Amino acid sequence: MKNTLTITGAPAWLWANLAAMGFSLVHTIADYGIILGFSPSLQVDQSVLTSVLTVLIGLVYTWWAWVLVRAVGGTRSGLVGLMAFDVLWVGLNGVTIFACLPPCGTALPFYADAIHLGTLILGPLAAYLAYRAIGSARVPSSWLAMASNVVVMVAFLAGIFAVVVVLSTGVGG
Image 1 (cartoon, rainbow, N blue to C red):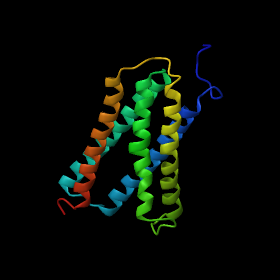
Image 2: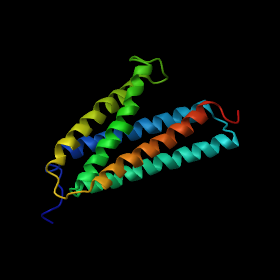
Image 3: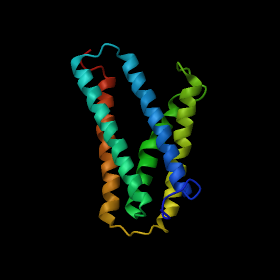
Image 4: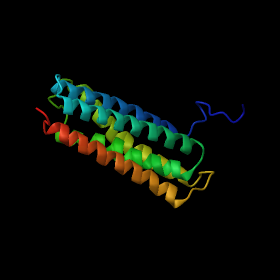
């Protein structure tokens, strides 16, 4: 029981990554609501694509949790994986604020701006803190494991972007 992680003993990179994950999840749920809000009566091929999008996003968060567990276990590959998620998933979600600067004229301007700013700040911050923790990682990792985390993240993003682009072009409608 002595080696359990306590709230006060948790490293800063862990707290920043948990906050980044939370903001990202809220952002994703809000975006999902916007997608469904624009298409209340989805066509069959749109609902299939929406289901594929849901599965892909679920896989992203499952992989992210796995990488977080590896990082907490002290592996460098886990920390590199967190950096990939922080920059590519969280940070890129925040970059969308530049498409509509605050106060944005959306249905919920403060809410949308807070989500975008939160992800824009927490993504790079969490990546930086994970980067700083790599030197103190207890378990060495192979470059293949580190690179595979980045490749998996890029593959997920490519799949998600492809589905979103097809959905936004109004397939079936």
